[in-house]
Image 1 (cartoon, rainbow, N blue to C red):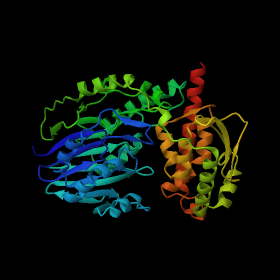
Image 2: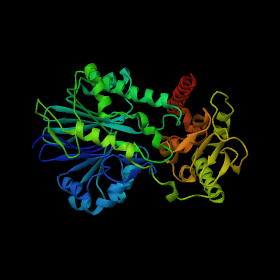
Image 3: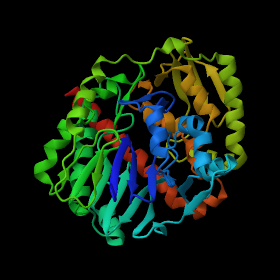
Length: 454
């Protein structure tokens, strides 16, 4: 078959002209986000090897582990090398992903925003950078346009119209169809229901503004698999829910099952994915959450040592003077002490980043989590981002999550190349975007909290 799209899993597809092929975001087995996410369907390793024999390029949209899976590289490293497969990634300041790939002796092609790269005759791609670190893939194959938005936060009409002005409309639109991060605690059902509806509304806007002929929902074929976050599955969008929007869009909705191909010139496409995925989603409620007894527990002394390393690393590139100055601005409410209950070691601790204190506390905790989650925040720049996505914690008061974000998210900002130092004067728009997200989040939490009380 020439000129086809093949779905593999989650956010991974193959686009091919029969001669050259590009694979996207390979994640096929194992967990993601500190094992807080699991795939609904796991691919067979032999089947993946068969697909890789036909691949020329692999595009990775961003660094999140459901798109940039280290397990994939470990399992297929030698095979990828033997095949001479090249990697395509957006050009970034930190070059962390590109440097990782180069350290493994892979060839990396870094593309600027909206730069054209020719795969083959009548087959070219462009990358569109989005938000802090995400990117979309724009493919033109034999005159057919394929937009892979994965989980780019292009939710507003304004953003979508800007995107359309650059790239036009499309024949095939691939986009995330359900929420993919923490959406309130166990009691905050209203927020999760609202988030699911907002995601469907985004599908409507994306489909109609980009005038997609076919809408292919993907990048949401996961479930929350930890005992802390399993409740988040209660309102996720399923194929049935997605079909509720079909009267509001002109696009034909196609669900593809793993390994299914569609020929892009075919004007009468029918797929088998709808029934397949409905059956798989029905199995989620029968699954058992991960057994926390198997997790590594970190005692207070170990956490305190790691906290000191974490703080030292923070203030190598962030100005403690600027951080203290910003903490005095009352409406920002940043770097306030946060109190966390560690369920596995039965301790409540207070963290004050500016003072450099981590101590046992008798105060009422703001948040509850496993010690491994706190250790990851201290150990890795992506640790806090991981926690916000996997939702493996419980908010013990309605301001707990926002307070924790305002206190512990600096490492996450650093991880994407943003620092609170004197250069911030030239990059304040990024900080403004971050604060805007915090304000928007707090507004949603307060709204949902009031709704639940009623």
